[in-house]
Length: 55
Image 1 (cartoon, rainbow, N blue to C red):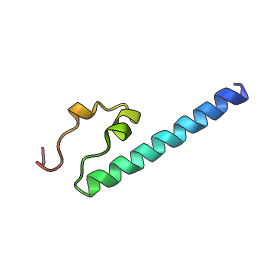
Image 2 (cartoon, one colour):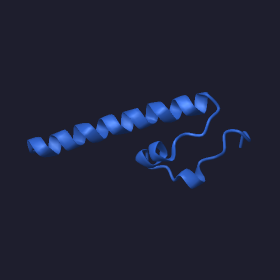
Image 3 (cartoon, rainbow, N blue to C red):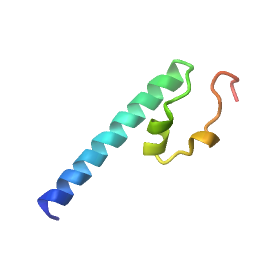
Image 4 (cartoon, one colour):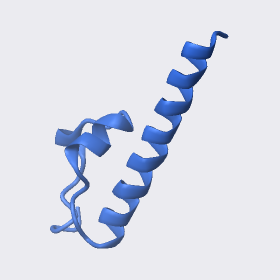
């Protein structure tokens, strides 16, 4: 693995961890997670349930 690929992997890992943390905080706060965070996690924002309705 080259240095450039390794840094890309590490950057992507940090992006996923950050998105997971932000999405979890939003759900705990009964808010809808940011669409960008859901997309980073591989979740289609249109398919994410609306937390305000409790569905």
